[in-house]
Amino acid sequence: MAVKPYIVGIAGGSASGKTSFLRDLKRGLPEKSICILSQDNYYHPKERQQCDESGEINFDLPSSIHREEFAADLNKLIQGETIRRKEYGFNNPDHSAKKVYVQPAPIIIMEGLFVFYYEEIRNQLDLKVYIDVREEVKLKRRILRDALERGYSESAVRYQWQNHVMPSYKQFLRPYRDTADMIITNNTNYNKGLQVLNNHLLAMLKECVVDRSATVNS
Image (cartoon, rainbow, N blue to C red; front, side, top):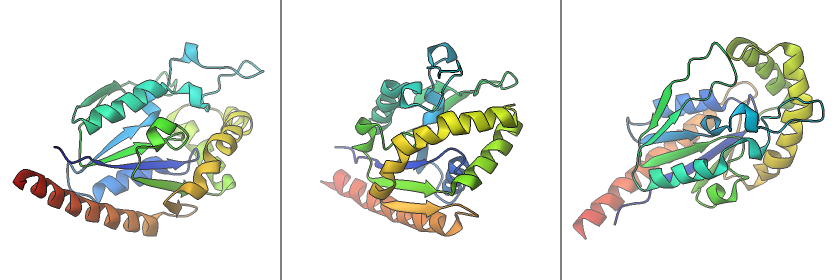
């Protein structure tokens, strides 16, 4: 019987630094020991998204994500299958979508706004990590990020923040903060929290090696 992967959920509000955190986390672990399944690559097409009262698309609702496929792909990774998807371009016409391949690994990271809200994913997590950042810091980062990477104006970002991002955060993400196993603050940097999580995952990898050896020899 194969050893079940160690599954980690990493959530945090928009512009909390999840992408950078995951990049640095992966760098600190052995090659092929970790794989990351990002919620960002599971958005429904633009024409299937809900609009607010002003007719603006709201991408910050749990229903904006193809929830069933996201959960199904987690189960495929657990079973040792490779995931193939197209990278989501956040409606940036200058973005050239790439194919994303996620290879199964001893540690699976489920990343996104709603990984704690989706019960079928939350129930499979061995560790829940919440990245916590003050609201004014996140807004400043999002204005800069969306202008550079997604071509959004500051006024558009502020509209989304007030009408979509924060209401969704308060309803679907913030209530799960106190249920997290680890809270990492990133108002200035996440270095200490990153090191703690890195050490924990290295320890889990050692346990995985021992479990695999016991399985082979039994």
